[in-house]
Length: 316
View 1: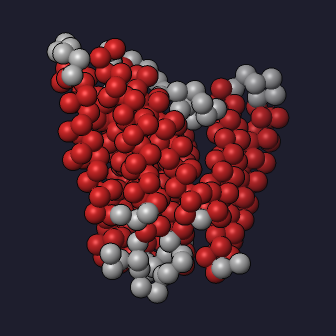
View 2: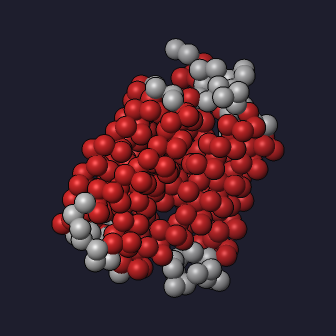
View 3: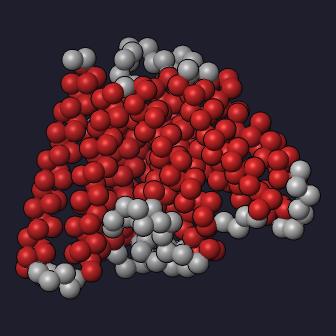
């Protein structure tokens, strides 16, 4: 067993302990306050905890399998997110080939380029080549009705669901002096801070939330919840600095950036949902909604975290 795998197992053991505690609390609350399932808040909390067990288990298996397993896991996440996104936007029959190209061309090529660590191409493949190809495929059918809106929707789907998410496995390709063979821990750090922030914002919001930040976009987000969640996530990030090449202060600073980007990412994705008149992107994950509902914070924070780490710590 490598030192990185050993550290990862310690982290997973800690997460398992947290989930066991949360499951115990959820069980007690259900027995006392919602024995027949009459309290929606407690039922939602227990659904979230059960879903977390599954997500942590999947993430653990992928990370322990290394580069191939991690890249494949996030490629599948991109596929599921892309499917959810496309079902909510307006497309026409004439967009068929652009969508086929996105699902079965752009997505696998992007992740293949990341798997072979061709940074010079994967970093521009979607923003340059795919963005030019997709409107060309759409215009071949001669359908000009709402053309700009339709093309923009497909391009946004590729950008959000493929390009941004693919930055997570791309962390494996960074070459950081003195950190060789441990990059998988950067993914663990990013995911734990992002999801820890979401969980703590939810908890602090339930306990102290009074002042709504953006009631038209996300009624559940409050100043108190965001502040408590952000500070908690920075503390979590600093305490996990032993997993990373960062000092505790640097880890806290990067966690702050991750939290801010995740927060604004959540608002952007909520704005899209409100525009489409839905509450959740899907119903695949009990208590959470769809894949994008669970990944919206990662979508905006992963590219910034990747490039900050690459610029300041990596030789590549």
